[in-house]
Length: 156
Image 1 (tube, rainbow, N blue to C red):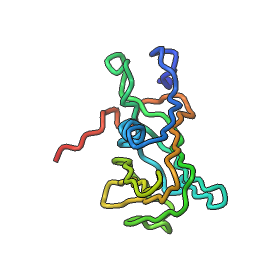
Image 2 (image 1 turned 180 degrees about the vertical axis):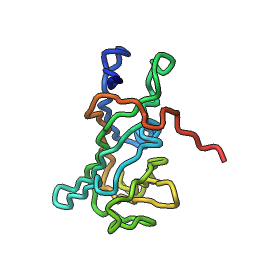
Image 3 (image 1 turned 90 degrees about the vertical axis):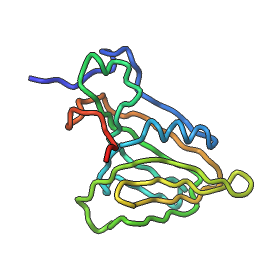
């Protein structure tokens, strides 16, 4: 019988990171790269000005990769100060669709405002118009063996 990996096994702690500028967004992007999520796990709360995703994140930072199979963990990627959300290449009616996050970038406009772009595999994307950068990436479950048992690859 196989067991989920435990945080204690690698003496690693779950991620709980914040981003307040473009450099921080680059860090979150590298840690969330190749995360997958069902389309049903996207939430836009216009009143609270918050957009969030529940991701199955590949643990790129895992120092114990040599000791065990590649791992994923569920994590919440949330953005505050969101004024508008737009998407492209996503059929929101397809409740079985699983999306794959390739990158998160920020393009500044005036006074700290700008656009956060979530680039998805298959030419999809989500654009968040934000008043200011305020994002978090927080692991919310224990790591588990990646179903593919392999490291994501982008080779031809």
